[in-house]
Amino acid sequence: MAIAPHRQVFEAAASWYVQFQADPPTLAEQKAWQLWIDSDPAHLAAWNQMEQLQRHLGTLPQDLKRRALNNGQHRRQVLKLLLLAAGTGFVGWNVQQHTSLGNVWADYKTGVGQRRSIALADGSRIQLNTDTAIDVSFDAAQRLIRLRMGEILIQTGKLGDQRPFFVETRDGRIQALGTRFSVHQLAGSTRVGVLEHQVSVQPGDLSTGAIILKAGEGADFDSRHIGLIHPFKSSEVAWINGQLIVLDARLGDVLEELGRYRRGILHCDSRARDLRVSGTFRLDATDAVLANLQASLPISVRYFSRYWVSISHNV
Image 1 (cartoon, helix red, strand yellow):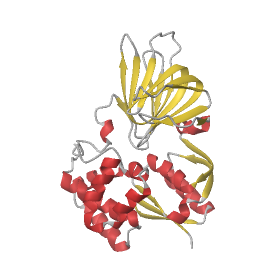
Image 2 (image 1 turned 30 degrees about the vertical axis):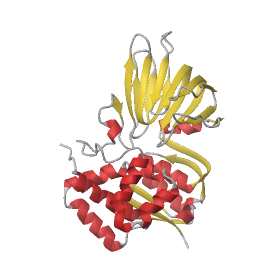
Image 3 (image 1 turned 90 degrees about the vertical axis):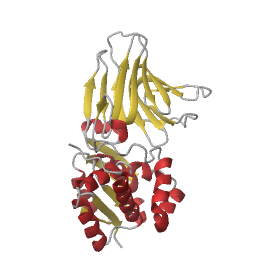
Image 4 (image 1 turned 135 degrees about the vertical axis):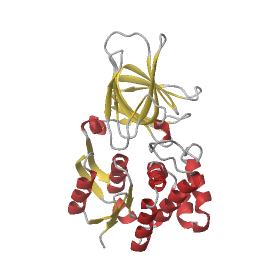
């Protein structure tokens, strides 16, 4: 049976997280944290839930993050502000499983580091990336996929079904026009990329006009705005083959992406973040990826525990 941590326990886990965001833990802090984790199954459950916020915290404005890092006397209040800004808040954290909130009641879901392929009745196929949750709602009028969280790749069916095919996120709707396309729910927007044919993108605010994205094009949008159209390559969905392919990317961005596929924290210092990386990396072997990065870049990778890894630039 899964452990549901009380709010007080979750706040303690959150306090550890915010404390460690400023600097890697000292040996004494590491031992104290490990003792806390090991002392009660509810503590580990709370830490597992805290991990789910890592990517959201990483997308917040730097000035907001600094408030959390520098305000030791009011960490709970500052963290609550961070959670609200990330669209999460404390409401509902007392759940009966260790997955993200959006996963709890979803029709189909994956955990951290998992991938899944689903065949639908109309012949469509949906591939779910790590930590993803969707609902499927087909009726006489439409075929609707609700992306609660995470990332999916859709190949619409070719069985002559005339019902429109939609993907709905919290930012709006994407209509498939006989196509293969990717949809990624980010913290404050939705990212769409088209590999075949076309899609129509309609933000939730209907006063914003829809746009058509063609094969090889992508765009980010929120409920009111659609960003600039940019190139979208098949390498961006290499995750379906368990790969991350990057060319001259920032190490910080690469580690943020790797962090989606493993439990725990990947802490990277500011000097190491701007190093450039190219390569093809296995998403099911993130520890091996970190070892390869350490061998090829002037960085040190330190494991404080299986939940906390710190990457720093060699002096």
